[in-house]
Image 1: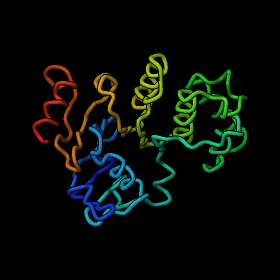
Image 2 (image 1 turned 120 degrees about the vertical axis):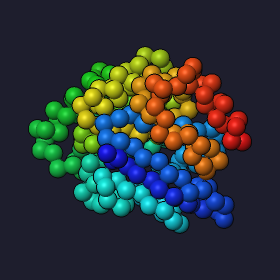
Image 3 (image 1 turned 60 degrees about the vertical axis):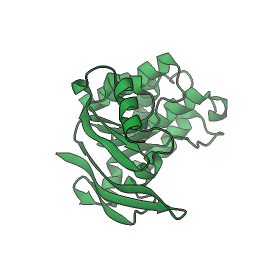
Length: 236
């Protein structure tokens, strides 16, 4: 059953049509990779889904409902590509601040923050200011923030772009664990090796068009990289 369904969405920015009637759907309990070359329209797509911009036409259904309601927003997690964090808060303070939006008791929130710091390998850095964090550490605390409400549907924009190999392995293991516990994950990325190792299905967007939709990763013959390049070249 689709937890996210995008149908015939068109969007124009600065008098230029960026999305040309794109359609795709994401099923419950899967990791869905949204792949793209540069300038493809992936950020516009995610902003449209999250209600940050409004398409000219088409429909976007989340949890079976058109658009996002207050209730559906409580069931969603989101980490943008560029995380703008409060540099004079510690990692622990930042997560506690974000947790206050979800009506957790102080005891629940304290326990949740400690759990998340451990899950993203920051338990020893929780009392350090964010201004002292490396880019990879900021990426990880941003990921922790995105799952503080135990979301049913998680949106991630380039979740592994600044991570070293150990950090990428940690994030991939975490995403698989979240999927296995019932979270549906939709993420944009251009790191094809990560997609190949954890995604159930993929779509490819190129020049504002979906050129591959709902493809099972395990059904591919050969490497995802070769398939991706072939599809982009055929549709350029």
